[in-house]
Structure formats: C-alpha cells, structure tokens
Amino acid sequence: MYYASLALAVCSVVGYHSAMKLVPPHVNPFLPLAAAYLLAFLFCVGGLFFWPQGSRALSELRPGVLAIAVTVVGIELGFLLAYRAGVSVGYAALAVNVASALVLIPIALWFFKDQLTVSKVAGVALSLGGLALLLRK
Image (cartoon, rainbow, N blue to C red; front, side):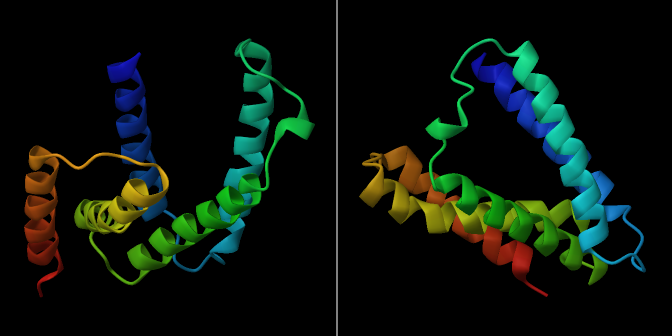
C-alpha cells in the first residue's frame, strides 16, 4: 500500500497539472474550480459506499476541514493563475512543492515532533539548491 498510494498521488498530480494547464484562459477561474469540486464531491460521496473502513459521522469532523477547503482552493487558484501567467507546467509544481516542503520542515519538527537526520539535512540542502536553480531567470 505504501508504494501504491505514492503512485496514485504521482499519477493524480500529473493528471491534475496537465488538466489545469488546459483550462481556457478566458474562463473565469472560479468556474472550472466550482465544476471540479462538484464532480469531486460526487466522486467522494460515491466513494463512501466503496470504502468500508472508518466512521462516516459528520460529527467526527474537526474544524480542520474548513482549513483544508480554504487551502485547497488556494492551491488550485494559485496554479491556475500561475499557468495563465506563463509559468511552465514542468517546473511550477516542482518549485511549489520544494518551497512548501521547506516551509513545512520547522512545522513538522515543532508541532509533529518529526526527527531530523543527516540524510534529511542533505536532502534539504539539495532541495534549496534545486529551488534556487529553478527560480533563476
């Protein structure tokens, strides 16, 4: 399940960025997002019937769901506007993901008590170098 879940995420991200790049620039950016969220809602409701594990009680949801909703819209809108501004589909996701990971490191260490190892520090250093190269003009 470990590698299968990562493969699902990778395939989904590739499909997401490819589809996002194809949204016509003259369309209000909130229209494709609203349509996508409506379809995603329907897929998720259907998925409730096919995934037997876990509670389905709305009362179990936490306020973090609101944060997820707000941040997902921010991610979607950010990429859509970046692509409309001419940002490369090949590098936008990489730059955003590396920058996001770098911002998340102190959060992971402080709030989630993740551990920093020598190999992770080396990976951070390489990521910083790669991000610098990606963002050069």
